[in-house]
Length: 437
Image 1 (tube, helix red, strand yellow):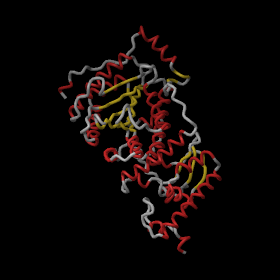
Image 2 (image 1 turned 120 degrees about the horizontal axis):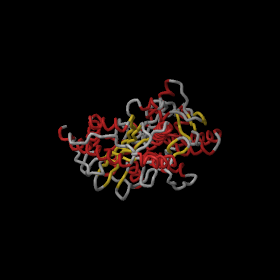
Image 3 (image 1 turned 120 degrees about the vertical axis):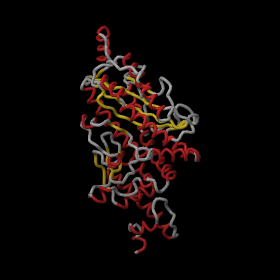
Image 4 (image 1 turned 180 degrees about the horizontal axis):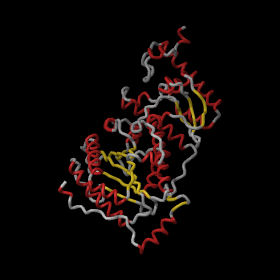
């Protein structure tokens, strides 16, 4: 630790002198709504067609099928939505379809894998739930008259680096950073009361895996001076560079390893802009490339594989799934959720809980027909556009279609007619009773 004793002891880094206080106050008030600072970017996003959300959902179900084939039968994504949930089996809960306030339909009571990292279907529902938690916390914070900062941590990386090894070193470096005396002093001067972390990763042909942390820092102060933010960024970067080097990650370049913002160059709030981008990804789907060719997000790897199989991309996605197994999408500092009255939910609970508007229940054979024919997306489309009775009629037509296919396969004595359930399991479930009695 002697090598970092030269770091300056921070004074109040976000102090505002009296000459600029009045103009900063005017600038801040002009950028606030009635209840405080706006939480969304003011940049207008392109309008989407009416059926864009339906197309994205259909794509996500197709991508889940790709992920199931890549990750194999032993990965939990493979069983997603194929069996009733624990609540249905043991607690008497219902299985069916429900809609949220925006008329978006979802299944409930159908056991989901809850894998926010690997399942494109579960990821949408879980991520939106998590995003709304962050929005609620930020709204409560801003209505109290306080501000938040947007921080990004990243590391040096190369195409030969192991993702799992880099994530472990990244976590250890950051843990030591926030536990250090210097960082605790910075937090005290900032009046930082908590943070939310979101770990993301992309992959590029030139430099391999690129893990990075996006963080929201909650400050119990009303204003932030740009020169103070730049000072904090410089001090934290020095600490971050030291701990990265200590854990074998190499020393990040000044201005790239750590970034701290209150406002972007266009004047929008950095935290709000990020939340807008996050919501845009959920609504419009994941792009195939990221800032150029041969750069991918994990789900854009699935996009690429759905168009053309590539053993290299397949192996990369398997590496990603293994490295992120068991990792939470968001991490809140201790006590922050309770401060804003946010209830704790596991990812699986978010992906399975019913929405506010009930549509219909599904019996065992109806649920099986949807899974057997992989018509999840079309059923939800029906639920959004038509009445519950019309939706159930459509589902019953799927039941007839699946029964016809099953009968043909049963007569041919084929045990490999479908990848997601063995014939013996079908017999045990009584699916073939109508045909063999």
